[in-house]
Amino acid sequence: MTPETTTPDPAPSRQAVRMRFFWFLAGSGVNYLLISIPFKWLHAHTELSLWAVAACSMAVSTSFFFLWNYFINFRTDARKRDALPRYVLAVGVMWFLSSTTLGFLKHHDFHHALSLGHFPLDLDIIATQFFLSGLKFFLYHKWVFPLPKEPAAP
Image (cartoon, rainbow, N blue to C red):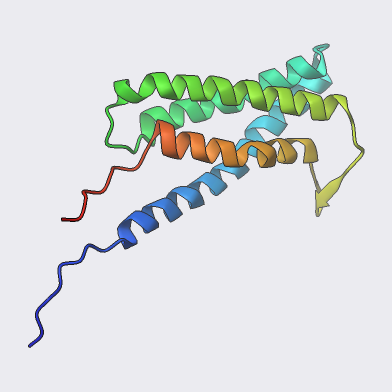
């Protein structure tokens, strides 16, 4: 018989990060729709500037994910009220950066287009998400909703 070792298994931590990353990517598809649908509607039916339309469409997405992440998908060892100030600050910063980036890209039309079948994709929205995704992932998953710290090995 060999004695069993009691080395901690790092797989649960890596698995948790992988799952968070997977849901982060899945959320980007929903995020795209929550930005593009209001943007198209506001641009077609209002006299708002591109900057205002970008800010409003980003506000729709930001509001939805704020409520979803804070009230339904809250996953951290920190108490909700302890994380709330960091979360509100992070949401505000990301809304501002996203609105500004999208407004800039819409204002400077680069005439790039891509379609999936009969569904045209808005590359300005995709680029906005792409440009800010690394910052957003780091900000939310390392600062706002950090994973619990592992106990130090003896």
